[in-house]
Amino acid sequence: MKPSDTLKKRAILLLFRAIYVSAMLSLFAACNGRDGMIGPSTLLNMVDEPPGKNCPVGGLKVQSGPDKNADGTLSEDEVIQTKYLCDGLSLTIISDESPGANCVVGGKKTSIGIDKNSNFELDANEVLSTSYICYPSAFEYPDKIAYGDNILAKGKTEFPATGASLNLSLSAKVPLNGKLKVIIRSSTGGYNTWFYTAPTMNWLVGIYAHDPNVSNESSQVFEYSPIELPAPELNASCAVRVGFYPGQYQVDYYEMGSTSPTYTKTITVN
Image 1 (tube, rainbow, N blue to C red):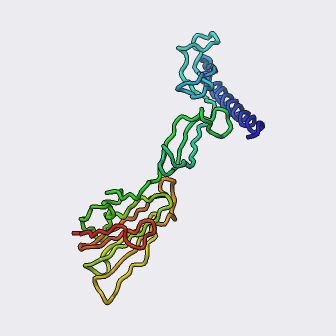
Image 2 (image 1 turned 30 degrees about the vertical axis):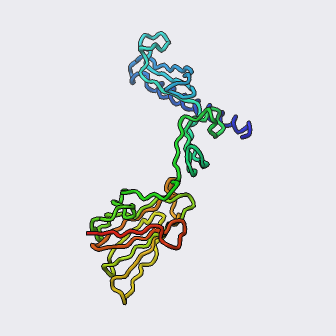
Image 3 (image 1 turned 90 degrees about the vertical axis):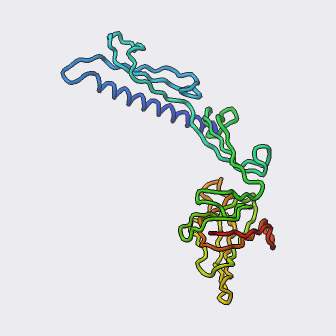
């Protein structure tokens, strides 16, 4: 950043302080007693505030109150209000985190701190806290999410019948640059054996396929496609609300672009 930009920034902060103090003085002047009565004058006291809990990098402490003893000085026992005008801006910076100790395969780093030198960046000594949102290093199928039990949870084969009430989920966490396709086949029903609803977060849902010559053969394809990115931490997740009628269903997983199932299970819904 050019030196002139920094000077402009500091000038803006000083101007803001001046406007604030001027407004406070006007307010206090208007409150010096009611019409027809002479009350104690309201005094304003401004002192530097050292770095600490009130202002992380220091600033200005503004105290006000009535001059009860009319000595022209605002004593501690006369202070009725204290405000702080702090130096620096609070910044939140989100950046890519390379693979390493903090995130095995990379992710996002969130840094929060105070811009002490007004350069609109967070230098190392200005950072107060750091957190990481990491991409999964392998395919993950949580047992349950907000939508309900996850039918993709490996080892889980029995689920309650929910029909059109959609109280189950189809959810996965996918490694960075990973690919996932899921095919669900019905072996006990025809049309209207299961349902899904928007939002289909990062799932690209294929056409429902049904062979009219084989009443018990129908299928649906769900493919991971990062097309909805409301926040960085969702880039590697996919979820959709689903519901099933009673029956048995075959679920085939195709991970990392495999042309044959990498995992298969049969689920029973009752």
